Amino acid sequence: MKIIEVKGLKKSFGKIEALKNVGFSVDKGEFFGLLGPNGAGKTTTINILSTVMQPDEGTVNINGFSLQTHPKKCKDSVGIVPQELALYNDLTALENLVFWGSLYGISKSKATEKALKLLKLLELDERKDSRIKTFSGGMKRRINIAAAMIHDPQILLMDEPTVGVDPQSRNQIYEVLAGFIKNGVTIIYTTHYMDEVEKLCNRIAIIDYGEIIAGGTLEELREIAGSTESIIIHFEKNVDSDLDTLQKYFGSRIVIDEKKLIFSTGESTNDLPVLLRKCAQYNLPITHIAIERASLETVFLKLTGRKLRD
Image 1 (tube, rainbow, N blue to C red):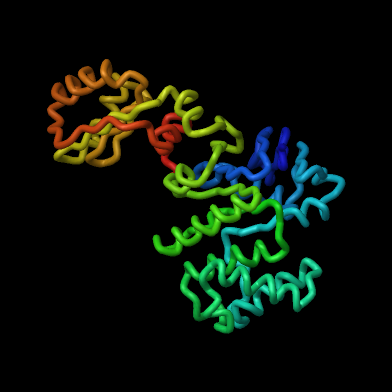
Image 2 (spheres, rainbow, N blue to C red):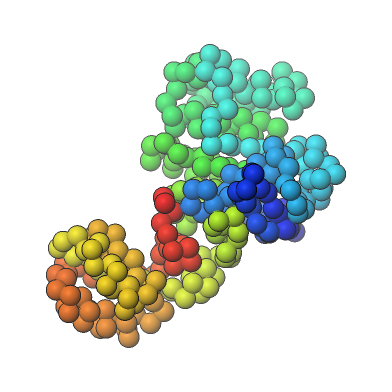
């Protein structure tokens, strides 16, 4: 069952086309990743789905309702975890959650009951009476997730939810999100961390310059990119200066990052000897070679031609 359907979405800010005919669908209970560089259109898409912004063109259906004709029904189905923390520093964790519950028309007693359950789930129940300004960045991020779930939404929209979060808090968040998925919540997730998308998402849509350029499971994206494997070569010295020379021979299949070369291939046994001969020809001393299943980062680089942080 499709719980979200997006078709022909367009949005401009002056002369800047933020979204150009964006379309995708998400199944009920799916963990869906929206991946793209800065400025690709991820946040604009999330803002439209969360009813914060209206598209110039296109249609959005959320949980069976049209965003254009029933925005309130759509909003009731959605919880939003924005990039910026939506919390009040001088209120306690519990007070923040009860406040957000009140905005959805939830009584104080029911909001308190729900908030206490969420705080326990997020391992913050012992800090329920502490003011938010005393919390670490990771703790604030977890409270932000609790605020988004206070009204039991069927869909959770998460825009860069783990930015600035320490590894331990990130893992706690992953565990909580896995629990939400088991309970039937649908999640749309944008992030800069490739490992998060690989670990969490059932399907991925790659957006670049306001357009969806590819979508599917990681294996399907590998096939689309023609990059089922990666040959990874480490060198003794920085070889960035040799990139242009090597790309003239190998084209966009090759990426160099300081002392590391990543080569996208579907036939490593044929390509490795050729690659090694070229490295020897250009006097590039090798320290280590590995052949791996193509990572999401490799696929992303092949499809977009640029790093996610660009």
